Length: 231
Image (tube, rainbow, N blue to C red; front, side, top):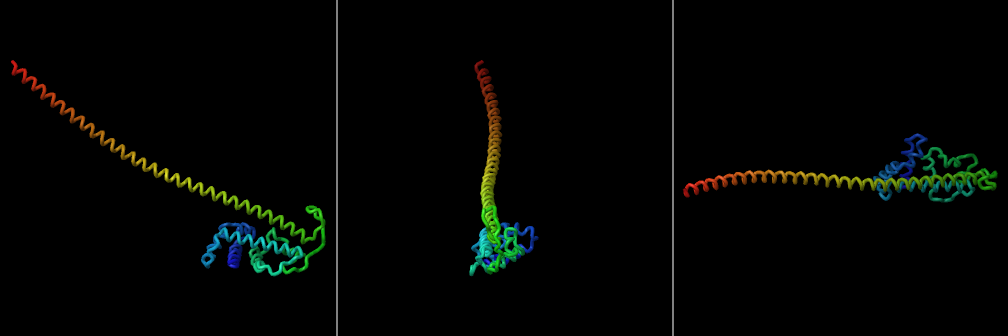
């Protein structure tokens, strides 16, 4: 699984110019693509985030192995040494944070000799070998990168939470609009019913007026008839 991850990562990185390599190697879309390929090959236990974490762990261990070699303690039999060539192929040349790897006098992972001349370090207030200096510098850079990665992950998590809130608000807005439309339909039906009742009431009032007039006519005729009979 790890070898497939590195092969696919090298394939993707090779399709971009050198100045965009770091951006590609930090992109979530890159690792989502690799996760999809792994799923197609039967490895379904890692999503894009899991693939990115695996890559960062590989790179971190690689830096540590190189730092040990620079310090005169070449690693022996470490399982991650098998991934070193693949990582170097991905970068094609060492990135800024790993520039010491192939510098003059820098030992390889096989423990080849390193320059041992000591120089004064104002940062540490002591003498140090070039290898020790490079180790200290790379540790500082690694800490900075890890800090940036942590802040990036926190930002992504915050954005994810905000997106969830936004989706919730959109769902509530949709439900509110649907309820409003239903209320408008009910109001239209109610207005129609009221209009029909008003029309029926007007018709009944007309019929009542006609009946009253007819009754008044009958009463008047009856009175006139009674008066004639009395005379």
